[in-house]
Image 1: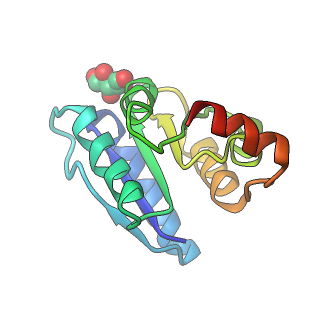
Image 2: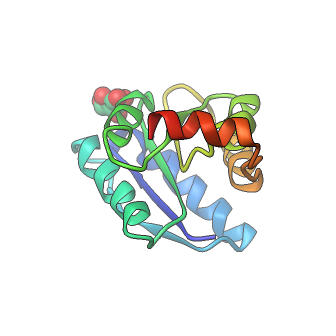
Length: 142
Ligand code: RB5
């Protein structure tokens, strides 16, 4: 699995915890910034991550900002991107199975690191169902 991850200043600290967790799990990633907690614009980082998916450099992406909302709005403007804002484990599992979501967005001001890591593990470990009805539904909006 090829994974790209990005954040803005609101998500920087949580992203550091996520990177450590991914390393511990042996999951390789490309960290596309931001690189410190100084104020920056989340759409820039949403674009960097979605570009990696669009050009095949990444299969999945993770985007973290303060709420996760701006990142999900920006990511979903991009062709071929199915970004899901998830703050619970059920949604993370369901959006992989039903929506074949390729970007997970979370808000660092919404979830603590413990829950965030469970959501990430669930998202990364759950395959798309490949059910005909889900393929059809996705094709209706992509
Ligand atoms: C930054 O203050 C904040 O607006 C951003 O991280 C995010 O929550 C936007 O949706």
